Length: 98
Image (cartoon, rainbow, N blue to C red; front, top):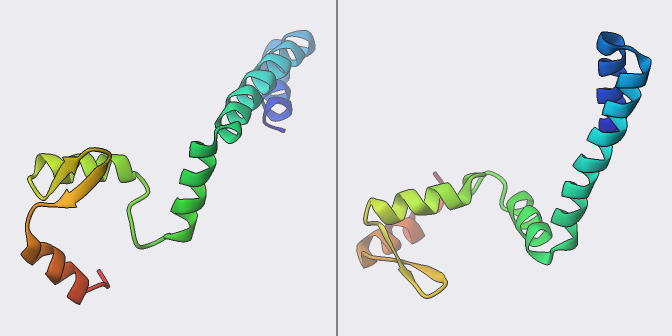
């Protein structure tokens, strides 16, 4: 659908042959990227995770975790993030709503 919409838009601007070519190439490339993302389990799990916790964590979780690490609120231990201060963890547990 994305390739069809892009092809129609390009067809109005550059003519029908160029629009069809653009739509075909754009559609195939975008579907290849989406297909590769969905074939890997990590991409699918991350999207499901974000949809399930909607409103409780930021959408750009990696950026937020990097910020918290640089600010000294979290530390990285292997593949896990840990709180650096027990008081912060206890306060967040006692106040779960933002």
